[in-house]
Length: 180
Image (cartoon, rainbow, N blue to C red; front, side, top):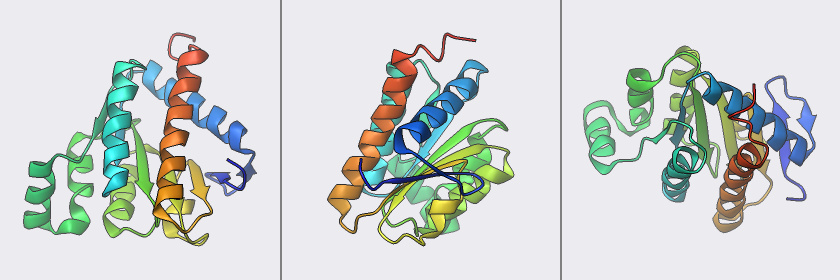
């Protein structure tokens, strides 16, 4: 994961594994107190979202949802515009204290950015995963921001998926959910 940049909410840079450790501890803390994790992403990032939401609840015992059901997306897109396909469900289903995992290769997708805004308005904490350009807007919106400095989808998507697995593995291996 050489070259990946992790920042916190104040923009301070963290060593990659330190960032993963701190983000995993934050997720575990939220989960221990009954909050859930919401995942959003487009295309392959939606597939990562779906996969990881399933793994976080099945393997990690953490309540998790991915907003990528076809009916949901087409309904929200038709009724509110595609930019709102994540914001509207977040407004309905997010509770203050929940966590949003926002995944976007470009970090520029309007629906992801509006989803983050909706999550913040609901009092959620946010972890972002982005790539491509270093000045992408998503990169600075999270409590923890994982940026992959690559310009190809395959590289960015594989590392985003790996980061999510590292977060869950760290939670599981360190028994962060069961500890107090």
